[in-house]
Length: 137
Image 1 (tube, rainbow, N blue to C red):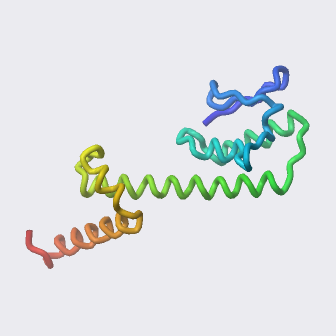
Image 2 (cartoon, rainbow, N blue to C red; image 1 turned 90 degrees about the horizontal axis):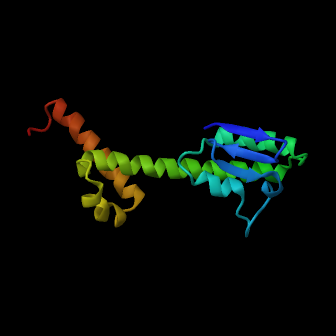
Image 3 (cartoon, one colour; image 1 turned 180 degrees about the horizontal axis):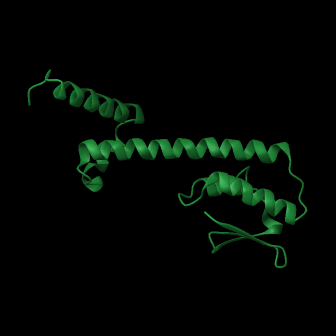
């Protein structure tokens, strides 16, 4: 992810086409911040986003606060959780869905993340056992 700071026009631009006015950098809606919003976008690199906001705050003469960093950290953790869940779903798809997400989507939605991980763990153990000759196919 790339970012640009345009001090003349007062914008932070992410990836060349996502513009945030300096006047809106500290905007919140029911404790929902730009970090919350952007952490849910798969194209956002959270660590680059932190650099971008620090530079934009500096350019806009907005002081950094503990709340700024606390909010970022919470959103970074949230993003890591989303990425982890996505990875578990993809591992499950590879093992059991033959890449046919639409066919197996119903199975995935009714199973918890822990159950999906259990399936992947069991399949991995069964594969190892089969390779060692403990299981005959």
